[in-house]
Amino acid sequence: MLPEIVDNIRKLKHSATARIARIKHYQGKHFCPCCKGRVIAFNNWQHVQGETCPHCGSARRHRLLHLFLTQHAPVMFEARKCLLHIAPENYLRRLFQKNPSIEYISADLSMENVMVKMDITDIQFPDDSFDFIICNHVLEHVIEDRKAMKEFCRVLNPGGFAVLQVPVYPDKTIEDSSVVDPQERKRLFGLEDHVRKYGQDYKQRLEESGFIVKTFAVKELFTHEQIIYFGLYEGETIYTCFKTEKGFQNIRIDNLSSYH
Ligand SMILES: [Zn+2]
Image 1 (cartoon, rainbow, N blue to C red):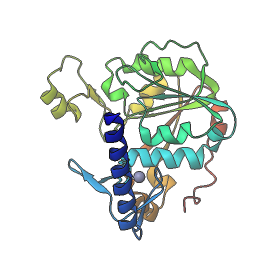
Image 2 (tube, rainbow, N blue to C red):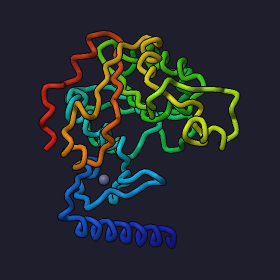
Image 3 (cartoon, protein in one colour):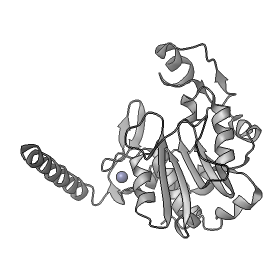
């Protein structure tokens, strides 16, 4: 009984704090699409300025994907579709799970709160199982990333698409699987648990794994004012991957001005 009371008090306190924050930010000039909250200023995270939402904690990459999927891939939310979400982020999981038309499967190898334990280099589902696959900032942690890309291509429905986001740097990809020291990995690849630093050839690597790839630059999708408004990173690119050209029909690019 006591733990239940403590838990309820904790939830009430959290809810009150969240309400106070909403009031404080009521006249903010920014907006988080993940929690629909007004924001005075996005919070800094490590050395990155304006990264996280003060209400829900979403990062720039979550806000970008949330906007892209809801505005440019509305088909995801319209008919009965099967979605595979790897290393599910709560900011996106909520969006998918609240929609009854999505048959949602969350999966990961090490996370606890997922529906399926999955090694993405050896996926336990048959060919063409999923209409959509979302895998956000995972492949840079995977040594056999080409194997994972091929597996995603195998289990993707020919009429569907995958969004496979990674941090991409200006030069060519650098990787060295013999580097295992966390500090050396951080120095070479950006973070202690990254096994490579992807470069501008990331698209080519996806294509070599069997995908047809269409990229969308943030600058192409949003105006400068919108990038500021939603707290996005203007240098980011979205990598949409298709198994056949039929998959293109899922993406709408005729509504670029519908963000406000
Ligand atoms: Zn938020």
